[in-house]
Length: 423
Ligand code: PLP
Image 1 (tube, helix red, strand yellow):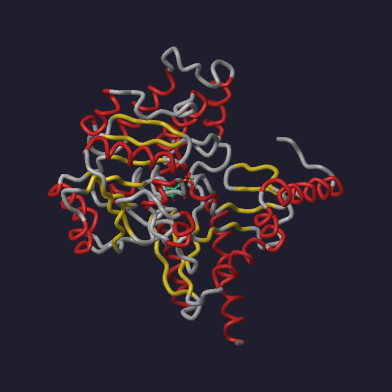
Image 2 (tube, rainbow, N blue to C red; image 1 turned 60 degrees about the horizontal axis):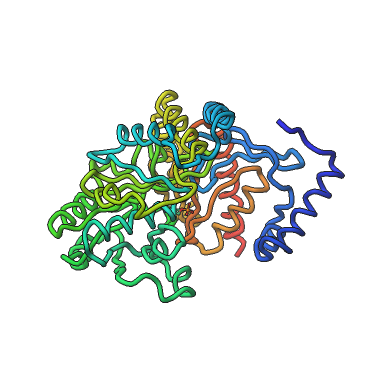
């Protein structure tokens, strides 16, 4: 713990930080922070709580889906500190142990015959590697992904993503990507053929607005891929590692991918870490030529120590089961709120601690985010669906704190309802 500066010093630090954002990081972001009144910079986080430099507390129900373990989980922090005292970044000449321990753990917990892991530092890198592996394994050049899907913003991942707003300014993207409506098996069947290297799919679309496919969809896509000899790449960068109340969201439907992409929670909310995990057959080209795809920092000891501790903590502390239980409770309360305020809330969707609330009106989401910030609760917009805000608390949040967050949410919905009445 670092403690807090005096109010006067805090003001100076905060003003300097926002000025520096504007001058050296990103002026648009600086303006957005100021517009939202977010001038108390992030100072000290722990568990489900984020504190700003003035000591104001926020319950973190956002964190872009990273913090299923909460902030600075003690077991993850301890593992990273211990690793830091021996080898921080690998020299990469001698074999490194942490990467093997993490890869073995992933082989044990991931579904089906997924076995070989390649480690990187973010979600989009995991997707890039998975796309390259699918091409080199299959000798095919085409991909099918879904409208509204989000897979990252580097060129390959952006080519797979399904929202024009983020794609169009960067044309031409990687050729050979075809997008079909999410949940539409017929469209998928028409799009996948013997030129298709892989289908890229989120089992639940996160940035698309927490969208669930029809019950038979994932198995249907699996069957189509099998029929056409195409691979199935599951993007569980957001939904993976307990977030939806199972270790992996594809397990809700019993469907096994050929390549699984992970990131966000994999580093335990302490160190950035991404990975794709593939079956031995599919990974074969990278086994044959280990330098075909590489990353200087991918699989570094600090990140892998964090990853091992993160997985162990999930399992030892029953965080996946807790995510399922808290998620059911949240859904009950939010459904009741939807019944009470039908002119504000259009739909509530969720599994575990990945929950989306869709609003009837366009502006309601932004208004809710702002109200809730004032009340000390952080929720999240959806990049590909502005009518939906996501509530994604950590599984370590206490029952009492979750109640507080949901009560603030209910108060905020009531305020929006009042505004609508006066229109
Ligand atoms: N895939 C999904 C499903 C995501 O939700 C995200 C990020 O939100 C990504 C990929 C990209 O991850 P990153 O921002 O770490 O590149």
